[in-house]
Image 1 (cartoon, rainbow, N blue to C red):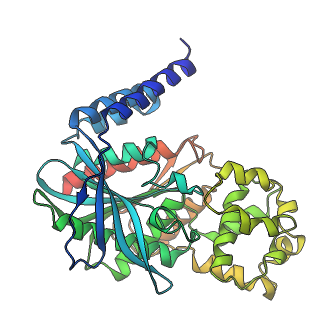
Image 2 (image 1 turned 90 degrees about the horizontal axis):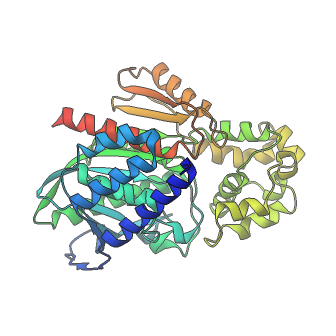
Image 3 (image 1 turned 60 degrees about the vertical axis):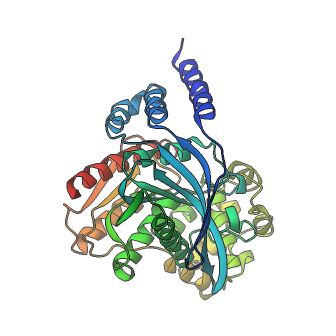
Length: 416
């Protein structure tokens, strides 16, 4: 049997295993009226300790390049996991919103730290964590509650319970607000549990958009919310941290393989009342198409098919030449700067990961961020750069997640 056929065969049995072993009941959890953030939760599924061990054993065969790390994670399995959909109160632009996400609780009595994972770029309502319950990445993340964490996966605004609004993609203020409010809701939810509690220790992680969101969250917690959560560590993978550099990078290219990322930014900022005309930035027909493509029904590939990978055909020549200097582009320039996240002096253990062959989000964004952290006085013993040799943006997802979890487990052991 060749390698590809073996992988497909193992993948089939992995999917079959999860489908059979999950308990898809939706039991309601009672909610006291005095909660500020937590509205309600429903049990989505559960995994026994044996289920999780078997799943990771199969995964180590399916992904032989990660087998050693997966086998190490196996040694940390302590319990089964119960997976809940949580509904919670937040706000956007001063307006009350009811948002959603996934919470995974160990099924063994104890007091546990929280691990919040911010997922990467997604345009489909059907692919949100609370909706796409068979997503293999989400299932692996859910199962990691078995290693002694309360796992949280926010849907983000524009998905789940808020899929009637646009997604404020790469908008720092609303991202931090909704993720923080979910963490507060989880604390209220766990406070009603008889068998487990939260230690208030917090670990945060994410990849791509989620890496950017995690870095934004880290900076906000350290500067504004340190009294609420004890941030123990942050692992950020392949994030578009400096959006101005991203803009400079793509406008200097002949081709860029993921134009839907760029359209997503403009769609978001238009909805956030961007003070720059989209017709000054993008050529026809793309300027007119952007507001129609991000309605939650189209995948990134489907949106790419309606755009162009040719940057001289996508952007206007005026924008490519003059976006840094012409006042008519000041709105988008300001928006990009406001929603970038810069390095600062940090004492929080921080792991920065990026695939060296990533041509979606250039690795220089992470290496620049690391250098800026060190220049800002952060210790090299605190901030670590981990290049993922040969990894693209897509193939870097799994090794980034596994490396982050193993690092968290090491730190958790040292903190206990």
